[in-house]
Length: 448
Ligand code: FES
Ligand SMILES: [Fe+2]
Image (cartoon, rainbow, N blue to C red; front, side, top):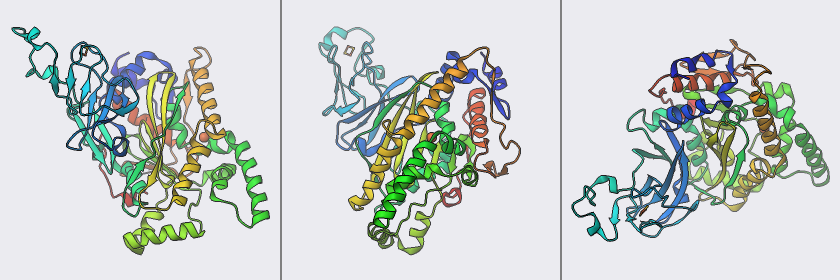
């Protein structure tokens, strides 16, 4: 497979099934997408103290995000420069004031520079010395943080983080602006789910408004019944019932929810749930925001029309409920997802609990919502692995009927498959060109 004929697998309204199943294409994706673009590593609050670390994969590379003595967050290759042993074997922890290799005790500062090598005289008169940069843990060439969210790129050069994110940066603005101090912290428990399907299923599904009233109908309808019973008995039902009952929305209503599809494959599913009840907790919370930002800014922040923001090809951020899901592809048919939620700094616990409820009721692997999606994606993978059942995957719905303005594709019906068409245009661009596509950032308000 060459980079040139990869382009033939993606047409305007359909793609070849092999982009979901072929191991060679998967390897090229890792090399030409994941190991070049900016990849989300984690939130700064996951490593609050000196020596705190969190390990992750960027493409095929084992990395570690670590807080150093200067309070900087570094992203290093998790590999000893001696004979290659991974320096951090755990998912996360604290490594003290440096890394020590478990094999021959080479040690390193928290920025990766070599600190000590036992029996150094053994290297006398060899070309190995502590001044040799190859003795250091290798660092990701570029690391940047946006409002506390840390990204790294394994490419020496390329678009800046701001250029890569483009309009999708509103995900991080929206999540942080909902705090009166403009900051969030990660709740240090994340669900980790291994999906038996290609990563693209997840990314397509996040803005697939049509599937919700089919796949999640049984959950939505059952929740609506219970919600109504609670309302009849008590006069009102807590907001969390609505998290599930909203899935019982009809086809027509889903069709009226719009998607906005940006360059680089990013996109937004606009809001449909209505998350501004008038209970005392919400009123008190909105007052806190008004004291911090004033009336006008508060309204601007709370009225952005966002359900999900996608940062293609690996993040789904539900900023109004402080949720973030991140994909780490493992194989064509295997994808690890990390499911996080965040606490808005400076708000009462009642507001945090809304985020926790959503995390557990909708995004957790133990809820019917996530489980029903996972089943679809696994069955989708099995269907596409068939070599004789058909070669093409259809994205024809509303093809040619979207509005395009300055490179942004606006759906005129919520169920338009413009979402997938837009994602695959970015995929094709990444996979057939050595350079990454760039997006010109616009005003965040405009994006929402
Ligand atoms: S492999 Fe790390 S010290 Fe030898
Ligand atoms: Fe779903």
